[in-house]
Image 1 (tube, helix red, strand yellow):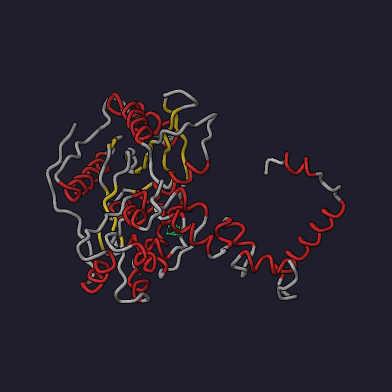
Image 2 (tube, protein in one colour):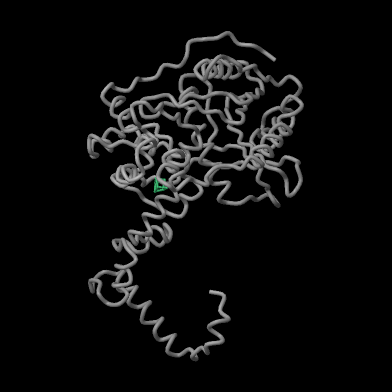
Length: 390
Ligand code: SF4
């Protein structure tokens, strides 16, 4: 174990006072800002079209408390059982000084390098507060890169500037290769069966890892010889056992989307400027007032929100009440083009849409085929109807 002296915390650009004040007013003057974590930043990338989420996250609003105050508490988040299981698996993967984890990184992403031996470094990253830990991590990365030895950073702290404020992020691990490459390691407790895992869970892990890659790039850009790998290592239990297995995941696409989203967050001032001056998302306010405030910010609800955003139940309710096609899925919304509501789509299918619109023409054709198929089908008896599971 090597130790590192404390050093100067990373510098960040402070928000301009009017923006800071405006965000505080939106959050509620007495409400402390909720810091952004990697999950929240990754979720932004999962729904890049949602101005509501961008504004609320940019203002540091506690969306869990807001959803509860709106009467639609979120069921989003990990169960206690899943958290305990995840922690136990992570401890197993990192046991024995990280030997197994380093072996997996070398096996999947360390082509050409000497295998990590007993000499691999595991620096002590403890320090006071997130700023101190981020500074200690930056120093450890610098020393490991110049040492040219396999180094495992267990729960390093990374700083990423978001909308003018630092967000502190804690990946499961970062491995420094002897050639100066840095690899993000994500340890998850969902199983990898026959080398594959649930694509939705892998996608969520990739978006989260992409946030860490962006944060690491800030540090790597200042160090000669350092580079951040765009392939991260996903470590999961193998099949139905508790043994670790791993697969590299290319996060270039997720990294690009997340970077665009973060740039969009820096324009949170523009989103706020479109809203009434007295708008406030303080969860202590009455539900009707909060409902009006939330409704004033445009959203882009899709069923995917249910797995990524605390406001999903509220937004789903409103999307359904407004007859929005987005509530039926993003692919359907994309296929229906300019038809924004289910009523408009049904009217187009019935022949009310513009004759030259290809979407309306396709819907008319589909409605005609459906009518023909129903006319040809034998009539169903009442007993068949009652037996139908639909
Ligand atoms: S649940 Fe609502 S606020 Fe959250 S991402 Fe979806 S539409 Fe946006």
